[in-house]
Length: 358
Image (cartoon, rainbow, N blue to C red; front, side):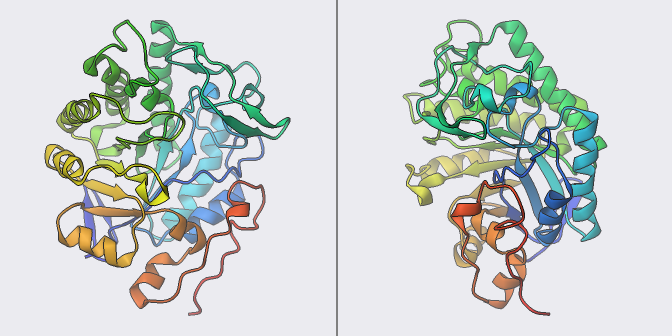
């Protein structure tokens, strides 16, 4: 099943593998994609679907060093290099929109941008900056309702630019403790207005972003990634977590989104997403369902055969194996990823992983 074609709403995928989104920090010039990035994604176009690294829809969302954006004409042109490279190889690619929110340092932001979040509390921990090395996360400014409306509009405009840049759709990153999950998560969102204080309040921002993007480019081109029980960037479980995600997915399903992508980080040491919750979310979402988290060929085939998902996402395996699909089909050994080059500029550990002969 893993190597069978799959109808993703109005598009046909050549297999059921998804290249999961992975930050690579190669947008060295003004957070703009470049020919090296086009080469990287083009090399991996045998995936049924590529989801790009997290891409900010706003200058305020560029919290990490050298991550790309999609909010100006130069970035549209840069991403067009990427989408052309993938499409030339017969692949499909969607852009993941990741606004980092409070997971940021001001030194990583362009001039005039600011760190924002649902609350004024800084994210615990540190992050790397090119200018100052490791630094504590900057304290964000708590977003007003006007700021929230502006951020929603930024996502919608970025969605329009994504289609202009040649993408086959977008994925909203509502996981891993970035801005959308900062609103979802009760450990982070302590607001007392209409954007917090209850399941409906905490879900409101995610749903407004999704609706705005659907209105901008159509539901069949908008997917979303969720990670209930995730712990990245000081999130973690809370009392109503399952009720909240059930309510969220019911409303997302009613929109007719392109897909729902659920991430389980237990393979990396985080608490697992309970199997019963995954099954419930799958049953509630009337559309294609992607699972991510620690899969290999055998476990992917088993999950598909059991009806647990329609598509399976692979992360580091695709990073280190541009020809992952061919390797899995043939049973060939996989290259090991070089963690020292995950976020460093240049081609080393990026476009130089070997492929099988022939």
